[in-house]
Image (cartoon, rainbow, N blue to C red; front, side):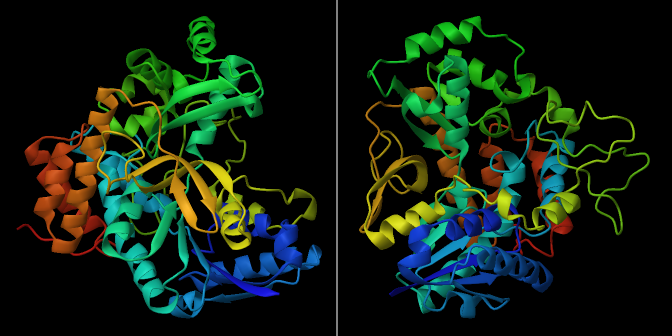
Length: 461
């Protein structure tokens, strides 16, 4: 049987690492038609050993013959790999809470701060170095492999790898599928019956066409009526902004307030849970100091946090992780992520269509630069991954908003390469949620000091 080596980098993570392992163990072809080698790599030995123990138990339970091993050595993990799945993040909520709070202290109105807004720029710069190290190591030891990325900020990181290395790279996100779920709820239809065309920027996409797969009927007229009839307060935190954007631009966006709102200036009016983000008491708590509590992440006001009893146990990140790594064969199910379908399609020469991938545009979305990383539908087969060009143009206002982000992508790459706080300042001042000039300068200095262990060294130039 032909050999297939898949490397999971950041294998100590919970959601994407375990999801990919679930998909591989459930694949009959990867069990019977290939000599499968899976290498688990993470910089934290304790975490990768935990994942290896879980994976070994799971593959044994399914009588799957894959060879599975662990390492903390990146080059060893990547040597001879056919596919490299990457999901990395260091002290995720510790740094994300800084990305959220510090820019807001300096006057930014950003929400979330993961993929858009000033906070996302520090997030990008933290992950750029490790991501480029992975890609450049691949150039040496597996130059023909595909890098399949789940790490955020998705578009910014994939664009950096596309421009600064020769590696074939694709970024994956399930945000568009979240949007299809919302369409199905409005239309009161099964989501399998809904055809879509859509795209834009990762976490800021729009459905330009929706239709009934059985009849070919345009579903936007029905959606328009259903949206008008729907309760105005329903799922407020998640879709109130989406409904407003639909009425403003004429197309329904995805995936929801927390993400779409990162790229615009008016999101906070539609986000009741904003004050809950990494909530803490500044009188009683000193954030980010030794042994201090990292405030828990709250996705939205309806996120099963506000209706708890006074002494109900809170689902912490630690508890969630502990529970996730308790193996139960009955709970193993497909993740519905795209990494393993892509691997199978390329390896076995199938042809499939994916709802959304992130790659350089190359004309797929009119009005956006060819070298900018965008998100839309794609075809995958033995030859690789190519976009399906969108047949409907996005509105001018949306193209303009995405153009701003494309320029920010370029400035962040320049800031990283040139080690320049000044280029970072230019990027921040361009953002719709920018603070004032003086606030931005002070914010950059504070963030660079707070995150100096993990940010690249930057100077004012």
